[in-house]
Length: 178
Image 1 (spheres, rainbow, N blue to C red):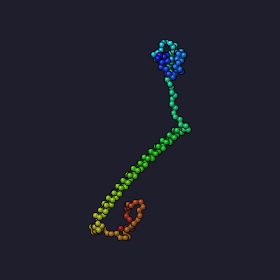
Image 2 (cartoon, rainbow, N blue to C red):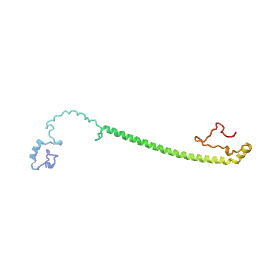
Image 3 (cartoon, helix red, strand yellow):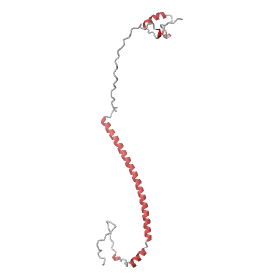
Image 4 (cartoon, one colour):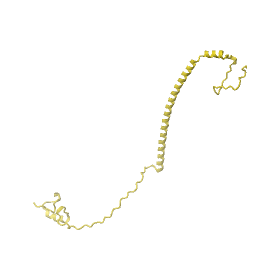
């Protein structure tokens, strides 16, 4: 079996018929390209003209434009941004004020419990003082030792002071009899 070097490497399916190889091979020589190491003449084809390739300019991409939201202008965007920041600041202020109020309530409760404890201590001390002093001993000492006399009903003057509980006496009370 002879090898057809001109059509070597081509597919069997490229050939229309096996019997008509010589008729095709003359056509293929004119219009075909032979690959591989079977090329008979390296200079059989005309030399290609080499193109002088100019360096392509580097691609310049247009500057990116900011995204435009349809229906919102720049002024509206600034306004909305300002309102959102104001709402956030107001919410933060409200939360801090609420936290301060809770802290103050805790302090008030602590102070009220401290006041209640002090009141209990004061009442206990007052009761102890009252229990330690006997009124009968005071009366006896005042009448016998200091020679005091108990006031009669016509000698007692009562009046209401609207400003304070304390009374300052700058002069003698009129009609006291002395």
